[in-house]
Structure formats: structure tokens, C-alpha cells
Image (tube, rainbow, N blue to C red; front, side, top):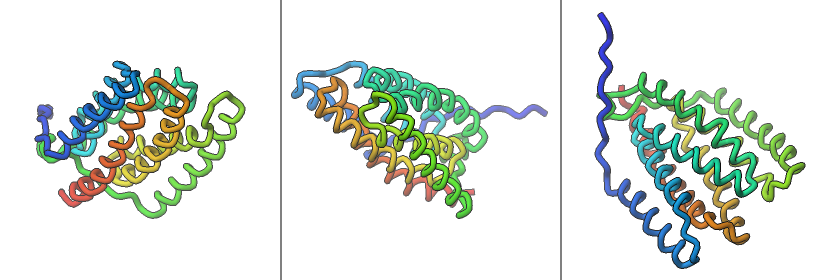
Length: 231
């Protein structure tokens, strides 16, 4: 007998979700207007990305749809800003991984999607291997970027390599990905703060976006820990 595909149901938004969405949109508009450099493209990309992380925290597959759209736009903006590792991360890795993640998460849905997905913790040997690979990758990529005109090679390398690992863990529903996203968001905050000082047009919105991401990553650790206890 053929297995019937269960329909995807939309999760209920909490006050925290609305705080992230409306908070990001409001602060972005205010800061952009005050700076006199409102950029529609970065505002759209930021909104898509905030929706992506909200659905991601809830363990809902729609996070990959918003992730695809946000990654395409942010990759273009990073490329225009000369952040080549960041651009490669978005366009060559994040975009195709959204498709992989969609199919992987469809296998791990709980209660037709109402209860999120089955999450899990890594083993200690897996964590040690992950840290070693990330450390070596940051060192190697930063050395390569120093040979280009990338204005922030170390931060760019850190954001790129750790995000690669975090996206992989997200795809396969490992809780440790949220700790890695906190590191990535910290590196992104440093990069876009410097970009703000350099007068990059859409940098303020990108900076605000990653501040909201950091708050949501902390929330993600709490929520995914709870989901890991469900069978």
C-alpha cells in the first residue's frame, strides 16, 4: 500500500515570533530613514531571513522556502560588498542545501508538522570532530581571503566556515547548530558594523538582522531541547 503524504500544517505564531518580525521591520525602517539610505532589496532579504529562522526554530519545513529566497538576495548583496566568502556561502552552499533540508525534514515531521521535527544531540566524538574541522577551515579560508581585496578576511572566513557546519547540522536536525549560529551571527555583526562605518548602503539593515538572529538562536536552543525529548 502506498504511503500517503501528510499535508504541511502552519504552526501557531507566539508573541516572540511577532516581536521578531515586527521588531525587525520597525527598527530597520527607522534606522534606514534616519540614515537616509533605505534599501528595499535588503529589507526584503532581511524579512525573508527572519521568517526563515522563525520557522526553523519551530522545526517547520517552510523555513527552507524563506531560506532559499533570503540566501539568493543576501548572496548578491555580499558579492556587491566584496565579501566573497560570504557570497559563496549563500549562493553556492546555502541555496542548494535548502532543497536537501526540505526533503530531510519531511522525513522527521511530528504530528503532521504541528509538533515540529524530531531533533537530536550530537555525540562527544562528533562534537570534537566538528570543532577540529571548523578550526582548520577558518584558518585555511582566512589565509586564502588575505590574498584578495576582501576587507575583513578573518571575520568573513569565520562566518562562512562555521555557517557551513551549522547549515549541515540544521539540515539533519542537530541541536548544536544553534550554538554555531550564535558564533556565525557574532562574526556577521562585526562585519556589518564595520560595513556601516564604511558607509555601505544596506549595512544597517543587515546589522539589525543579525542582532535579531542572535536572540532567536538562544530561543532555538531552548525550544529544540524540548523537541528532542518527544518521541
